[in-house]
Length: 587
Image (tube, rainbow, N blue to C red; front, top):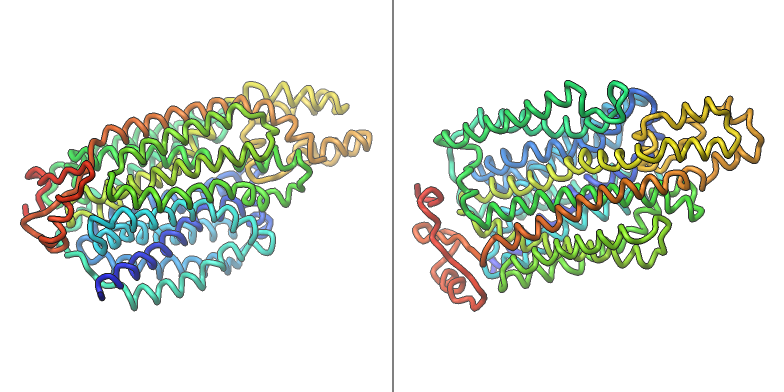
């Protein structure tokens, strides 16, 4: 019937929307070398690292900050309306990014500003797509639908790496141009085909809650990110007063936000939803999984671009492309496991799938720690495919459980909160995991670098100077697929050396060879924490209890009598419990 046709239209359009938004969050990660070459800016020189960081975090940060607000506005004024606006804003920002007329610092600022605008459009898509799908599908088929939706999101974050590598080889502007025709078609399609199915719940905008949440989360996440930059003779910036102030001030503002929300008659987000165990456990696990996923993604790019690919003869300029290609098994694992787990969770609930998924991620990360830095590829491919399967098992059932656990009137805000946890995890992963890898590098890299330079007849003073530089420079060089030795030593030092030594220093194997040992030391710290977080996410997922579906008997606008009977008759371990009075939609 028409209702069934609409369900598939809603699913396909929202799947396109979240896929496009997630592709564009990760496509820039792998394309940064080409982008900076295109605008004529060296991101590793003093003062330019901030451009690099903001291009990395700008889109994720604005998404994390805005999705709850935009989800709530969708509940109030129409989820489809906000979603359509998001597609249009996203597409307009993609056009502006592709026509960047400036170069140098001005060109970088142009890109940062419109990446933030693009992130705002993406936030409108994220905040409302999950709620639109939840509105359109009955409980008995919701896991399958959200499974496809969530797999598109997860796959998008990995496909972006491949697309960025391919497009950056051709032209850096193509990284942004590719979204324009898809965005135009998606915008027109959504405007023509989507309609409001869920009921609007008009209320008042909670300005105090919105402002304190935005300020608190922004300050905290930016401070976390800037903690990896050197300060005052230290390799990192955790003693920087601005970083400390951002962390403390941001945390304090979030506490104020919580106080305001608990005492507002019309809060931005109903914190009492966290009394529902399925909702609370799902979101905590989502934050942990998002942090692990982001950190793992960055570490695998570092590993491939900075060490493995150059050691295997790949030119530094080609490493972004090949890093994306060699990460294909990760995407394949997500694509295989995601839809299947989403569909099965409709009958069996989320607990078994989300728990086993994060356990599998932990086991595969342990496997990555046990293989050598210069690994045999098939073993690496099996392990990252297992990680993809793990995230595929986790994602869709977890999101379905979260969305099933809340009243219909709060689905937009709940979807926004879920996206906030996931996006915050991505930003947190940069600060937390990069800090740990820097700790590992700082323990061994100076002495290893000094010894290796002296062996190539570099004068002691020059060797000491290069080896004493903060390791964050070497880290970002590896992350961007740059060979930094020519820049670190300078033309004068290189020309004074015997040609054979100069050729070794600027060749493909010297820098990755020096970096390998210290990198593995850092990797033990990084993946050790990631394994612990994955197991904690598994434990939290297991604690969510049996399957829970919120059923509103008084207002059956979306669940008719027949469907309630179907839900209650499901033979799987299913609990349908009227939510206690703080969560009743009629109050």
